[in-house]
Image 1: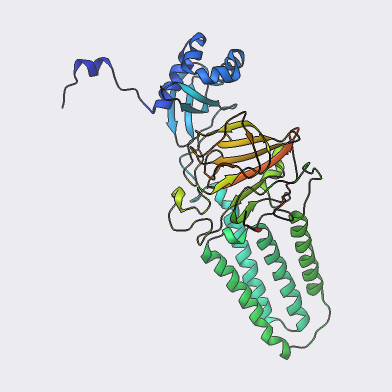
Image 2: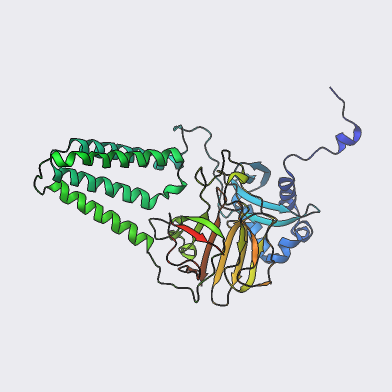
Amino acid sequence: MRDLTPDARQSPRPAGPPEAVALRRFLAANPDDWSRLAPRVAEAVGADVLRRIVGATTDRVGELGTVTDSPDGLIISGSRGSVRAWVHLGPGGEIDGLLLEGARYTPPRRRRLLPVPLTHVVPLTLFVLFVLVVLWDIRSLWTAADRTGWLGDMATLAAVYVLVAGRSAPALQPRPLRRAVEAGAVAALASAWRLPGLPNGHVAEGLVSGVVLLAGAVWLVAAARLHRWRAPLSRPLRFPLEGTWYVGQGGGRMLNHHARIPDQRGAVDLVVPGPLGTRTRRGRDLASYAAYGRPVRSPCDGRVISAADTVQEQKPGEIRYQPLYGNHVFLDTGREIVKLAHLRPGSVTVRKGDTVRAGQLLGEVGNSGNTTEPHLHLHAERDGVGLDLEFTDVPGRLYRGRVIRNSG
């Protein structure tokens, strides 16, 4: 065993990453020292607001214990509980970015009763049900006793395909899954060779219900794709991306998980389709995603009211606690606020207070903030209410599953 030198014994190495060490030092310090330990934070929010924020965190955690790193982010632990935090350090080790969660943190259970995460259970269950329904309908088509029965079964199967294709963004699914779904459709259509030898039959309940299901499915998907919030922009935007893009989230409630958030209800998430869903090759590194690093241009003339460029990127498939929008640019057009989010750190070209013109380079697509894979989040709002997006160079509605080709 190597003996420690006197200097090493007197100056033990701090435990944890530098961000955790700096945050604990800040929380344990006298409030009069906060402007020295976190000068940009104190200047941005003011001393009184900073005291209230830190005080609320102290009320949640109780007597300060540790600040540790975890897959969910920095964890502040105390005698009453824990909260998550995010910190960015300046070049001198001072805190120049700080976010404290407004609720107690509950650690995830390490042991699971299920072999897959709960968030995967619902999609997996729906996929199994879809397969069972398709197989049952294919069997029914191949054993139909007359043409009327065959038409009813085909209408039912078509309704299932319309709902699945309209809601699930097929181009983003793994290729083997897409091929399996396509094979089911081919097997169903192949059963039509039996029709010449079948009797006509009579209009039956199966045919009526199949047609009703198909009409309902078409109506639901069409309504979600054409949905408008009746809150238009004062003038259309310029589409901020060039090349071929795919709308991963967009449209009405059935197609857009942003719809439940008032200011984001008209938002879209834009990705680039690749051979492996949104990836160009196997692997989960950021560079394997087709959208990563693509240039993002300003969709309008406006003034930059907020810009961030130092939020670290998430590992694909994981979400650590970070500022919601990550690296971003928010533009004030004088009539509404336009927000572009999840940009690559180090790519943002503007600062707060800058005036920009439509088409000006703002940054690059990244994976920062509340995101599991590289994409561009875009929405516009007025007085905290999300607006319907319209573009001068991309006609029509942007709904999940739509392919956009923009030459710039």
